[in-house]
Amino acid sequence: MKEFRVLSPTAILGYGFPAASFEEGMSHKPHVIAVDAGSTDPGPYYLGSGKSFTDRGAVKRDLEFMLTAACTENIPMIIGTAGGSGADSHLDWNVDIVREIAAEKGLSFKMAVISAQIDKEVIRQRFAQGKVVALKPAPVPTMQDIEDSVNIVAQMGHEPIMEALQAGAQVIITGRAYDPTVFAALAIMQGYDPGLALHMGKILECAAIAATPGSGSDCMFGYLRDDHFELATLSPARKCTTTSVAAHTLYEKSNPTRLPGPGGVLDLTQTTFEQTTDNTVTVRGSRFIPDDAYFVKLEAARHVGHRTISFAATCDPIMINQLDDIIAAVKERVAGNFSDIGDFFLDFKVYGHHGASFYGDTGSMPAEAAIIIEAVAPTAQLADTICSFARSTLLHFGYPGRKSTAGNLAFPFSPSDFAGGDVYEFSLYCLMAVDSPTELFPIKIFQCDKGVLV
Amino acid sequence: MIKLMDVAEVIRSKNSGPYELTFDIMFKDAAVFEDFVTRDIMTPAVFAQLYGIDEAQVQSVIAFAPSKAVKITILRPISSGALGEKDVYGAQQHGPLLNFEYA
Image 1: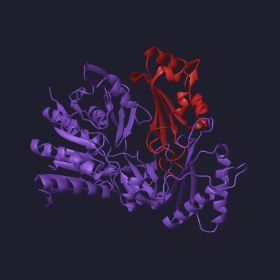
Image 2 (image 1 turned 120 degrees about the vertical axis):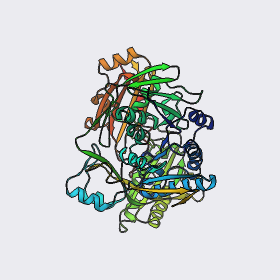
Image 3 (image 1 turned 45 degrees about the vertical axis):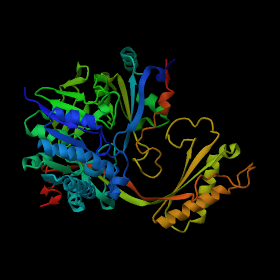
Image 4 (image 1 turned 45 degrees about the horizontal axis):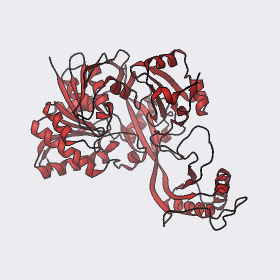
């Protein structure tokens, strides 16, 4: 029987994996080594700033194993959503690491780099044509959102990766890509069922998180055949069970049986999970249903200012019992003092009293409370000023019944205030119609000759 | 009263993209799960009351038999990482579910 084998070393490039698991995976002769590097989970900063949320040294360590093995076995290595967010600066960052490894290890290969960064003018035009539409429940996109955005990326499907493979690329590094595509592209190109290939990719994308005990830092192996696929772990410490795989099907998604992606929907209503060996789960019945029109998801962030924070705590029950009122009064005083200097955002996060949770009853007050004073303003200097003023006001604020007149706050650090840098928020999270799945994603092909690109 | 804490193996929350929060309750026992679903214990109205939110913010309540799970998805109060954020990943919003009891 025809069989297509995929090694997924880790849940996110840079999260690592045990060398023994990786070697065990290579001994099963994969047709491709693939990893998804992306996530919107760490928030808008990384897309907005163009920086990676994973560490360069950790990414290099993972890539050294993968690149060396791919070159030795002469199989493709595919990285999706380089640098976590997949804008061009993330792509350049990742390509630089690959070149450095190739130079150090004397490796040569044909490399494709696929951009997913979209020029604002392209989006303006499509917006005017009514081709940029809401992705509910995210807000309806406006022209102002487009103008405000920095680093707009579109999420590619498997088609641009297939094109790079057809051009003979062995190492493929992509900008923003739909997570399963890096695992599925070569299989779909070879005629395997897209529904099964994409569903297998959807699970492999998180590597051993779908095993028990779960881990984001261990490998997973997939076997794709005509009418089913199988998943297995590569470490004796973990097993693949129907429970662990089905649980993963729920993870981070709104509906476990209907997964929309570029060009269509992965329909899992007929999917079955069967335990076939102690460590193997067989999956059948997953279907890909193409949409009438091909849409890609757009993501972007806008710059909203600069942040300064101060960390302090109190253990005074008289203060803690009226903390909400005291904070409201301090906010008012800051607003009054700086009414003429423009917009700023001031927040007090009280840990021990709804610092982490948005919901639920307040409950009894804690014996100690930690307070993070946060100021966000158009300039770093103004954020410093607001934070500093709020901190000194709270420190010496004369609340009713106060006994502790020397100071209201315990500061663990000197200096007490910290610059948090640039602040971003998501500005676009919507869909855009395309005429072809490849038109937005230009592919550059290089020969990487021991780190030199020609 | 049955405490959800006692009959659930997993009670968790997480972002589902930057604009939604999704909650998973995975039951230990298939019969308890079936009973919970058949009697429609968790409705959008029940969840909204438990979380102190408007029912319109509840996007869906879905049962998923392969995991003996009930999944609730709601609108995020703000988009992930926006000003006023408390939990960028949305992984610590499961508190009220831990205290949920049903007859």
